[in-house]
Image: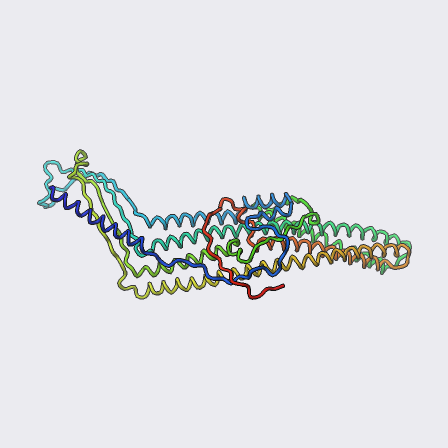
Length: 498
């Protein structure tokens, strides 16, 4: 009895030694380490502004100093359905990461059983001694442990890929937030510009209606011809038809903005008019900062990290899987004898399983994984190039629209002076009303163009902050992460646009 117990202890000791050696081997085994691809970034933007505002975690929409806009964006961040969908996907990938990570640790299971049965007396089983009672009870409890030892790093690489997928889902949510804030701001600015256009159209409509009534009276008195009256009426109707068109655009814009806010289509409250809104400052930052700021670039890189890790995962399929198993339990036909030493049982083992012939399956999986990495690498580089283009485009837009706005304002002043003089000369009967009409028409079209330019300039500022990746960090406080930044190497610039 003591001899068998001693043998059992020696067996357990050998298994412990084997387990220790396996764990040490697993700790010393490491796969390839991800290295961020070297990206050639310009040292500065195409246009340098002396005054700039920080952008990394700035709630840039607050720089417009419009409380209504701030409230609209806050509502959208809380209730927009796209944000909620993206947040749910993050939770989905978080659960997947937890599931994948659990494979690195041993699993412990238990089993409990109790039963009663009646044996047949007609079976010829010499070893079965039933006695006078054909009924028999059975009780069982066992605990089983199983652990796949990650010697080759396959499970750790799976965890790395799952972590990268989780981070990519978080950055995808951040990209949704960034796009949402920009869309709400652009939609709101478009709404304000339409309001201003409607006011201008109604003011011009009222002015031309007054002149139409005056010309109708003059026509009845024989002071003007029917052709002159027709010209005045044509000018009046040309403005009149723009009013319902602008009102329709306002209704459609309100409906679109309502959906962004996560509610049914309806009216949108306004704050300052577009003429009263304050132009924000140009955001600052070097091109290399885009690699850390823009969520779409971060998402693309995490997809690349996952693909890089999966190459090691499929390569490790060539190597055997090593698992340690153990079982311990009690079994008895009598409950009173259940916990006796004679009722316990156990087993321990080491399982090794690997491929012998796979008909090229593993080789094909490796080829597919490597091709996916090349695909995602080029997608990552393309995303960076697109980001650089968007920033440069927005900076050029801001500069040229600012120049255009100044020219238009001078043009409007000149047209107002011209209209004033034309009306004076018309009242003095030096010119016909056609000259006044031409002056009004030119002023109206230039004022409408000026409103559109202001809207385009505001939207260009929004696009600039969006393209530089501003605002999503501060807007998404629940998603704050303290992640190590992947090193960025910026070589010297080779060209620079002035």
